[in-house]
Amino acid sequence: MEKINREDMLELTRRMTLKRNCFSRIAGAYFDEEGYVDGTFNRHFQKLSAKDQQINLDIAKTVPFSDTNVELKEYSFGETDRKPGGIWQLLMSLKECELKNDALLDVFYEEFGKRYQAYGEYAVFLFYGSYDVPLKAKDKENLWESEEVYQFIICAVCPVSGDYEPGKPECGFLFPAFKDRSSDIHRIDIFQAGGNPSEGRNLQKIIFLQ
Image 1 (cartoon, rainbow, N blue to C red):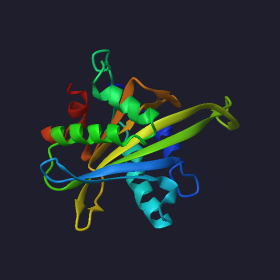
Image 2: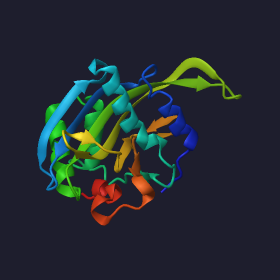
Image 3: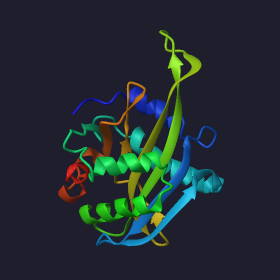
């Protein structure tokens, strides 16, 4: 496990505001406590009301803004993890389709529901974003020229109550990892609130279980 650079994460969260929004799509599912899907949604992020955009931005940025290397830790996908039919391949496909393929999303929800141990109803939120990473001079000032476009998915798992009202995210991930201001498809940053998950809610074990 390698260390995450806090500045990389802060750079991303600065693009998660109403004025500098990096997200184009939001999708997700509501689960009962047994892991069965109660309903799904898939919408263009900019078509949400300003209030709903802000609510969902707050959910999404919980992952990169969490306590780096305590709550948010980086893990590598080995060659075995990247075999066909595994979670890595599914995550790559979801990123490449920009969360627009409902069939792929249904596969993800089904796999997640099987593996995640819930203590009540919960929701899985998925955000697709892209960030035009600017070049930086040696003095760290932006040169306003693009170095690459970082395309990514944020997942946040929240307890829900009442009419599907989400609570604070309990866990989630950022894929691919944003490392040295660049995309690293062989790594994933996994978030666990408090840094000490219970056995059945350990996303590191859930994601790497093949």
